[in-house]
Image (cartoon, rainbow, N blue to C red; front, top):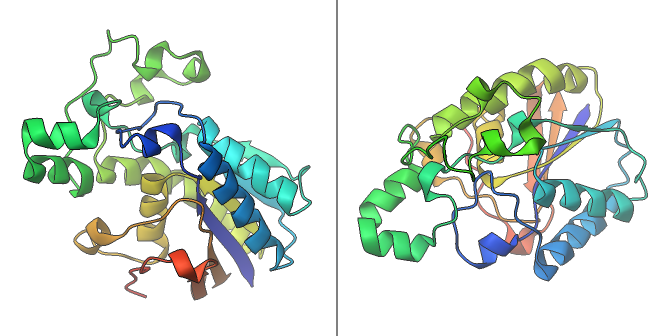
Amino acid sequence: MANLILVRHGQSQWNLENRFTGWYDAELTDQGKQEAKRSGELIKKLNIKFELAFTSYQKRAINTLAIILDEIDQANLSTIRAWQLNERHYGALQGLNKAETEAKHGKEQVMAWRRSYTISPPKLDKKNLEHSIHNKTYEEIDPKLIPDSESLLDTYNRVVPYYTKEIEILLKNEKNILISAHGNSLRALCKKIFNISDTMITKLEIPTGNPILIKMNSLKVQNFEYLDQSRAKEIITNQ
């Protein structure tokens, strides 16, 4: 049996400000740090010894993981940072206030950008200095791989092949794995793990700082639950 824990980073400053964050490297708020600490406290009660942790290139996920590992007394756990686990890229919407964007473009259009499986927001111009191709964090990544905008399907096609290649083999060998990532990269993973349909995935919500424990046997899900039931959302599954 393998234990896989998925945790969305704690509240970020741009979560608090109701902005489209995407690949912008937002800091955790004080509440976000407390959510990460609470995640660690809940995970510690499970008494799981992890073999490896994964996170993205974005500091809100990296710092959430660091707080958790410190809380569970596994601060020296080997950790892999993968840009493939980054949040969905919101293109030209990045940085905009969601309510103001709704007022400008209409609620229906904004909801299509946010929740449709196949629709991408307007692209961010590569000449824009806020584009990630100008960020030193990604200087070793082929610029052709760095998105201008992404639908959830695009995010799935980035996240899931990485998971399949690098993480599934560990779970198959009954290794305990911890992943600290983002709302949409985790939605993509959940779509794969729970075999969620293209239609139903639009309804999946993952709260910040509330770990999901998934027990697997030969990659087949045996059991799953949010560790903080008071903040749990429905985990949609076709299992």
